[in-house]
Amino acid sequence: MASVLPARAQSPESPPDTMAERVLACAPCHGAQGEGTRDPYFPRLAGKPSGYLYNQLIAFRNGRRRYPPMNYLLAFLPPEYLKEMADYFASLNPPLPPPSVPAVAEDALNAGRTLVTQGDATRSIPACTSCHGPNLTGMEPGIPGLLGLRPNYISAQLGAWRYGTRTALSPDCMQVVAGHLTEADVTAIAAWLSSRPAPAERRSVPQGTYALPFACGSQPQ
Ligand code: HEC
Ligand code: HEC
Image 1 (spheres, rainbow, N blue to C red):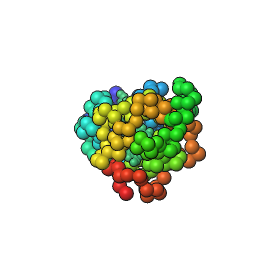
Image 2 (image 1 turned 135 degrees about the horizontal axis):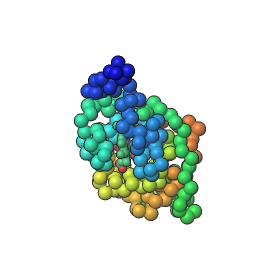
Image 3 (image 1 turned 45 degrees about the horizontal axis):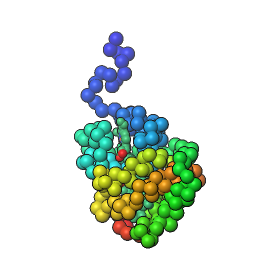
Image 4 (image 1 turned 60 degrees about the vertical axis):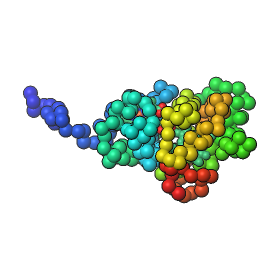
């Protein structure tokens, strides 16, 4: 009978050969193509800059970012392996989900658009587009796009930065940005971003396409 078993079943110790097999553990939460799932807190991974994804995997592995199932899953994986997983998800390009129907009033939506596209100089809030790009598609290697994410996930991340449970490489520019936002700002921004349709060109722009308003440790200039 042994001869009909697939090779792997005969040697359970050997790791899976292909990346597609290796990332099966990620699929229940992030989707088979890294497109995300119905759970509003499980983010899309596909098409984000590889450097950004790698920084996040390292952050979960060493506790700079906290979500116990992910901290546990990555705890013993070597950096080269994390790099390969980041490259893999960065290379995928499934369609973005349809925009969400905003659950906030029209004026909150307008406030969200103004903060994202212009910021609020009186409160030291830079335009999100100044780093995430005019089309919000991000910039290689370390700045992710902000479209195709659900409002609950966006709010949770901005909240995590405000309360210090998510940190990025120093200087952590997002901690500075999030520190200037109120709860109402976060709700408005999350609602407006998630209501945006997918841009025609979803890829992040190349490194150095524009200068950042101030330094981010995760984005070499
Ligand atoms: C049990 C569900 C679950 C599993 C399994 C899981 N993840 Fe996650 N992952 C999450 C959640 C939830 C977050 C967001 C956590 C937070 O709030 O910061 C996340 C965040 C991430 C992020 C950061 C995304 C971003 O945009 O910042 C990456 C990268 C990631 N996961 C990769 C993986 C990989 C690779 C695997 C498989 C080896 C995996 N995850 C398995 C639930 C999961
Ligand atoms: C000075 C540059 C800069 C500005 C301005 C900026 N960001 Fe960011 N943002 C970054 C960088 C860099 C990262 C990646 C950090 C990391 O490695 O975790 C990031 C990550 C994020 C993430 C995480 C995405 C994910 O998939 O988990 C969100 C959400 C976000 N920014 C929202 C915003 C919003 C909203 C604004 C405007 C109010 C804003 N950012 C302004 C540089 C910036």
